[in-house]
Length: 303
Image 1 (cartoon, rainbow, N blue to C red):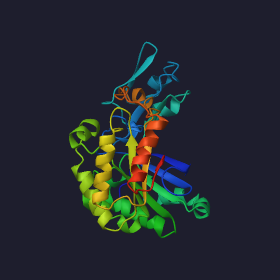
Image 2 (cartoon, rainbow, N blue to C red; image 1 turned 180 degrees about the vertical axis):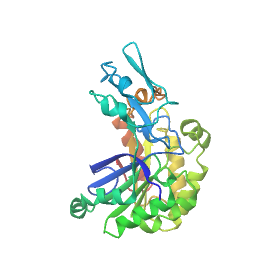
Image 3 (cartoon, rainbow, N blue to C red; image 1 turned 45 degrees about the horizontal axis):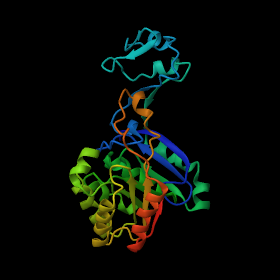
Image 4 (cartoon, rainbow, N blue to C red; image 1 turned 135 degrees about the vertical axis):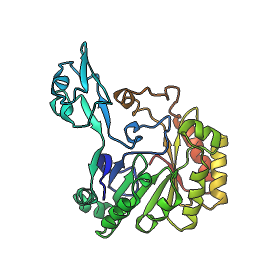
């Protein structure tokens, strides 16, 4: 079975479900949210990242590259992606740690072994492992099933963080191994959803209804982005949908937008398109929370 690309394994997380957790970020996502704070997880391949602030222009990377993919233009190293074989030589020779590649291949056995290191913390705090991304459910189904089976057979509770924009079969096959699904709802207007994420929301909402009917535990997560979806109308339409399908009776999490991931875009050679987005004020977040509570939903601000 082919190994899968992972960008990060975050230990001692307290924001992706109950208790202390290990969150595994898989690479690749079918959506391309404009506000994404993990842009290095969007593509399904390893990506080169260069930190200009750390780079001293010493030229060691260019001298070491065996394929001639790195050249110097004045003090600036330039990488030709067509020549780059992702051999990591330039990364190893960079004394300033200004060069890195997002995404490392892991086998099922390696990920299970990594998760087991913190099992005592899970047991003490009612925690576990959260599979995130990118979009973990867009990865190889056989790999994912084996990973989740390997974790649950060892007594580790597994959460799945998903955008829902995947074939229903990808969700259905992991239900038996999933403790809780953390399910994003971003926008109810499908046209605006497509503008902001690259796809409409019909599949996402349809999968959510099916997931709820399956009896699976679902926490709804709404990233609240100022100037995009922080309106009374969007919240009302969201709550109407959840109410109509009896979804989200356990928790709704309102997640205020932040731009802490914007600095990653230039390191990927990309421009951050969310400069006009704002973080909703505390008062505005409270107003949205009150809308949820008045409708009878359990809700809170934050993950």
